[in-house]
Image (tube, rainbow, N blue to C red; front, side):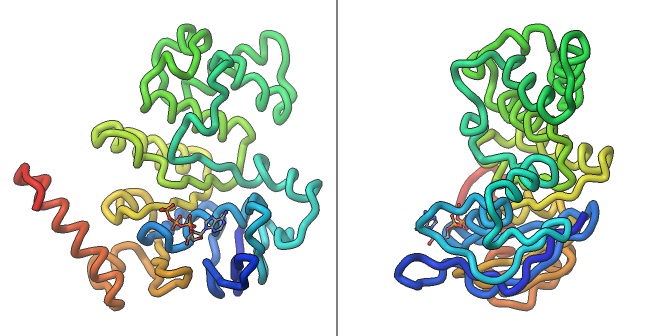
Length: 265
Ligand SMILES: Nc1ncnc2c1ncn2[C@@H]1O[C@H](COP(=O)(O)OP(=O)(O)OP(=O)(O)O)[C@@H](O)[C@H]1O
């Protein structure tokens, strides 16, 4: 399955463009990073791909998901795309979870709807989903409310929830930013593994080049709503050509070195 974004702009009612004429493609099973500082337009781009832009923002141009045009599509078409073709994991896992519903129940809903499971098969499906995201003590997890598990475990549940629809592409928007460093590394490893196991594509959004470099093979760098550089991730990091990318690489290195020698600049 492919995603093809072509000449996409996203405009405010005033006409100001927060995304300005960007084009990129995501091939079948490919892992692409969308990199850029806060406000560069990364999140609104992923929202547009899922047809989830708020009313105040308007998309212009073309977004084809598996051959279906998303820009201007009706709610029925969009429902078909969301979940089945593309699912999203957010920075804050709590956003994806219902705080008042036990984790097991939350996983049952998409498994029943998308995979037609019920009864014992549904229970096995929930256990399988928790196992796939390497959550220990599945019986306890099923009975827990989101606030009763750790932040890293909550993000694993949110990933399981996204995967329950069997998406062909996972959109992960800063999925580790809210987690501490060791948990971050575990979640990144999990996402990579799941993509490999399922042949699933990944659109990975992050301001953090170090994180992106561990996760994707190709990247696009966004600044002020435009793509300023694109290419294989090793060349973006090893030999960036644009001043903005150089600056991002420089600050990632400075932070890395400061952390290695145990003090921030
Ligand atoms: N609902 C909205 N209404 C108006 N402007 C918006 C809305 N959502 C986002 N914007 C604007 O669009 C621009 C891009 O925002 P976006 O959230 O995509 O940036 P980002 O690169 O994802 O940043 P961050 O990493 O902080 O999430 C910003 O200038 C933002 O203020």
